[in-house]
Length: 123
Image (cartoon, rainbow, N blue to C red; front, side, top):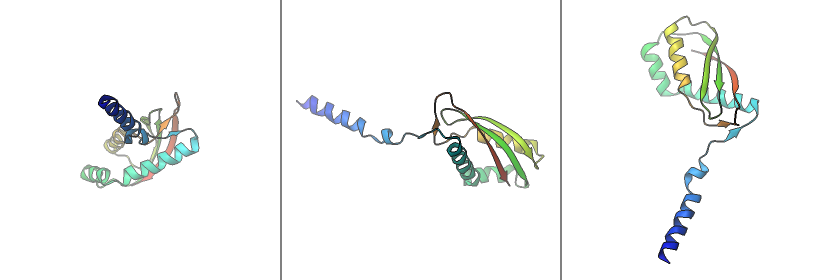
């Protein structure tokens, strides 16, 4: 009897655990994906972690960058391609590329789905 109570408690616990409610949403509409990517990238570029790293090495860099960001199924950034830029500092562009490629978005896409979003940022 005691084992069945424990078993029932464990099953109930796993069903209602926070992991089952903390799954990332699956986005299907391209416009929603583009809007979400833009919002999250804006938050990343305004975060204190990014600003601290940028100002440490590239405090004099100013200008505008237009990039294409490829997002794949599990919310990872697959590609970062500079389309146009006023910024000529190659080290800064590489820093941006590595920083964005390491980012994982707070959503998922459907299987075998990928989107390319054009994004412009001014520093």
